[in-house]
Length: 616
Figure (cartoon, rainbow, N blue to C red):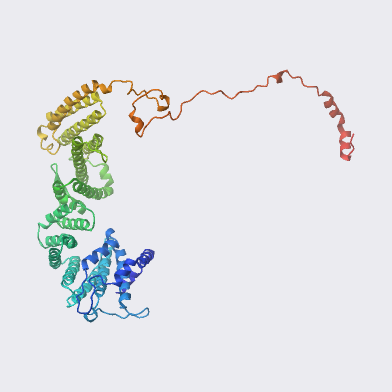
């Protein structure tokens, strides 16, 4: 208790500011001045407390929306102090601590139940804060377990008080579920999987019954808590021996839609822990006929989950979920590649001379790096191809509906995606250890032709939009050329091209587009609206220079209206005149010889006269 009071009361400048904010907030003070449940009229009336609702609202409003457990712990401490002051249930005074317990005899107000609930929440939030810090400081795990045991102790006291006849049935069930939840968390941290699963199942059963007993609006909160504890139940089942639990965890992540939040973070953490246990049995991987030992744990975990992640992406129901799963897979792959690079750094000489004298192959660690890079680039290609397919569907819908609203997709967006795909394919051909693999190089070459064909097709589509018929027709011919090269060179590589878009469909579409383009070009050439008429001729002059002529100019009501030439053009102006003094050459100045001689005669006599002040 002393440690909790000290941690909750002293949070530095931020906690002090937050405390002042809470004291100024009239809503917080009001919630402590009146009961959180039904107002009792006397000792015979039943007391009620919306335990889960109070916990969830407090957590969302005071830090847990962003995972800030320290802020929530400080809030619990301040709320406890206000409750004790309101109920006149103080633990002694400033100089002496006197412990008090809430007993059934003084249980006349549901705020006494709230007091114990806040004690449990404060201990739980401190444990979750220590759990975050224990990632870098393992010794804090002992303190974490101590705080969890304290939270369970307060929850047991809350459950015992709720067994009183003064408490209604719903509050009793919620207290039992809350107690089971904290017990399951404690057993989970102790890795007592069977006991933890029993506690979580008890909690899940109670909340499911409560959800069925009330309206849909009230049941949302209970169903949300059931979804939160379901991953923990499946993880406990996996550790007990249920091998199907891993697949169910993957399905839960898929059903969550790849959303962000505490549930998604918990699912990712549990899946990673499950794979870490499986990684202990993995020692090597085979790729393109070569077996490579895998000694790095992070790489083992990634390779074990690769098939599950790809299956989850294939089963994704919408593009947003698929995009988030792609990003998660790429992030894990980058982390694995970084771990391999760190192993390559100490062996710099071996990296420089990576070819072995006997076999001519790169080293195992370098080949593993190439394999992981291949996975990363292949996944990036699949992601961009998925985005391209969704953009193609949007383009087709746009052509059918022609709605004016937010920015619609354009062929230029697809061109950019195919540029990135082609760049990734170029990087694939340069992977160390695969330069001499002719089948691999042939396969990448065929894929490059396929994506070049699609890139040319959408470049032609962009030219069609601006009515550049000849350029579009040339590009359509280039598309047919690439497609025929793919068909003629596929041969034994047809299996590797199954995942790519079908070039035969592209050929059919290009032939149809060619006929449509030729018809549009003929109509455009014979369009009477395009012939010059006096009322529609635009000579490029601004409005200020053609006031005397009538012309239908739609640009006058657009944002790029031409009113005057700006900046104005240069005009000739007269230069500033230059003055030359020509008369100076014809002026005769008076002689000065007489004055020069007089000054020369003065000599010593004049100097002496000047000294004594005599003037001539």
